[in-house]
Image (cartoon, rainbow, N blue to C red):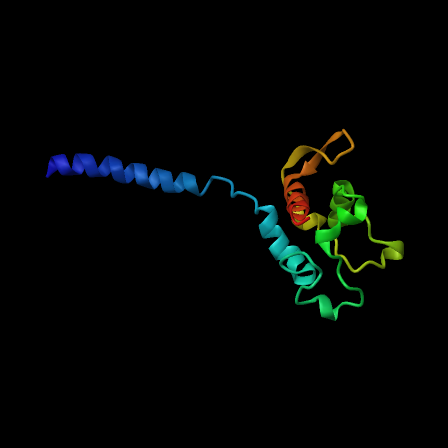
Length: 137
């Protein structure tokens, strides 16, 4: 009996310690696809074509995100897309329907070159979301 307890007690202690540490491990941020599903698909649709379930309720049809590169001479406009998502480009007098997602995407900063040759500290979730939208092209 003593031998069994001498094996079980350390194992139980290790299990309790592992479970306690698991609660301290930071949660991984959502992927770009997960953020797109949560924040964008309602208007832009699951495939990004501007046909989401809320699109019909809007005064202006949401952009077809699958054609951004085509409309930009074949180059995906990373910086413009990221600025739009973050909320820097609200349109004239804030007339655009697109909400400001900046506070929702606030996360760890990573160095990111949006195509201008300059690495700037950029929220990871914003980078991931823009890269996901680029994958829809």
